[in-house]
Image (tube, rainbow, N blue to C red; front, side, top):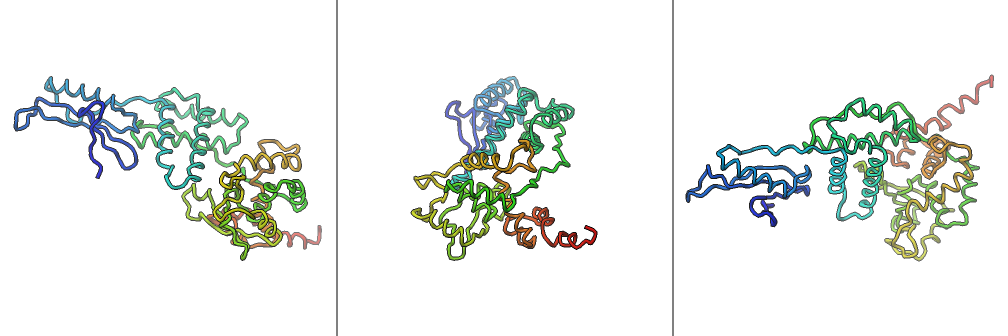
Length: 393
């Protein structure tokens, strides 16, 4: 059982209670001459000051201890005297938020998950510096609704996608919500994310384009294998990148895939099956030859260090831009071919070949049918056959 600890620097005047979540509650202690013990000596009293996550430090608690002691000597009642609320800037609240995220999201037993969590936090830190710096030194309780609206409009006029703008607004809302939860502030402005926009990818590779891609990647064994597994399983970049030898079953032509997106959202659908055909099987067996059971298949020569996601993105971006993206705007998410388009291509061709929507949902590891429904229009049963029967066409 955790017990109250005494400060090594300030002694019994500063006492600390370590909490299970890693935070620390501080207490200021003082001798009150108005209350004597049985031996006639002033009793030591303790007043809760606040938590470390709220910006409380040992030095501040020591100052509060001196203040309480002086009040007690003057005969004032000081029990449960509230600590003066400190005013924070938005940048300071952001730092508290990022520290909290690292404490609560990072674990001791999952190095790969920690890397992804750290990447997400660093991305948010970058978003704050790039897109919320105008508010950094402001008192967050003085930022009003109109300023948020104006800043949202400003962000939308910059060369940013609407999903990026929403990510910035989500970050700001998260900082405010945690600060209110920790009682660092009491109010927040209205922060409304953009609604009514559709940034889902529409374009997928045709059979001709798939063959062009295969020809372009044929001389790079790693990129070629990555593309074929992506098109065969529909796995996301991080899912394919983290396949291990032990995940592959050459008897059943299956691969156990890890859904890191579901893991980040707290879903239970963390592992699911992907499949590969005979042509990929032969190449895949050769590709993993010499690797150990626990090795990643996309590891470097030491069989331990993974190729980073940038390796695949950078190689494929050049090929995609050369073959498929000429004349298409950089911010056109619907029509530009990117790595994620391989997953979209997988699902689209399943639908074109008449695969039932519920099976596509399982193969994509979608949590709900709604996520898969957009592929229904590509199914022959959706209406193409009926249109072809129209006599006036």
